[in-house]
Amino acid sequence: MKIGCIGWGSLFWDPQGLLIDKRWNEDGPHLPVEFLRKSDDGRLTLVLHKDFLPVPTLWSLMTTEDLDEAIESLMVREKCTTTRPIGSIRKSDPLPENGIKQTIHSWLQSKDLDAVIWTNLGPRFRDTNGVVPTKEEALEYLAQLPDSIKKLAETYIRRAPISVKTQYRSEFEKAYGWTYTPT
Image (cartoon, rainbow, N blue to C red):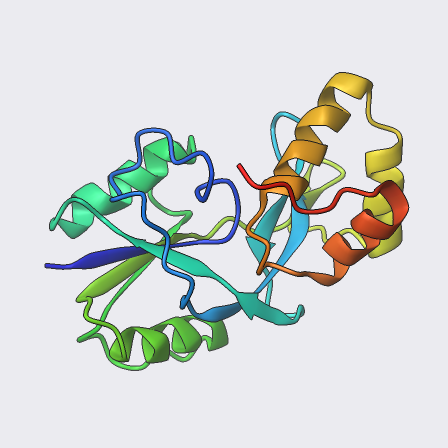
């Protein structure tokens, strides 16, 4: 089974032990991602959210042909305790009802892949899952970070693939000058 892994954030420059071939293809599905999740280390990270504009994503071929192993590899890379936050779909699955999964399923039909996986963590702000920060709240949050955490946040934002041009990213670039920096 040929399995792809969709990415739009740190998987691109820091795959760690993720079982991918480390070549990122730029023809991933256009998905609604934005800087909406306060990570455990304080960064604002990119996550899927249906209310935001789609941007191009990337994908890499998994080096395993076992879907369960691929999912577990992404789960470990993302430091998740269960596989629940890892999305997956097989080309042979029926068309999903969910809009994001529909988009991924439709994209998958045109690829020489049998299945695809992705990180499916949601927004989290003010230490509450599901809370979506406004652009203003995100800007204010980044402004008040201690220098050590601000540097982590800046690095994440600068290293996100250049094609992932979100609305919040444009605001971060204007406010802080955090433009794309190649790895």
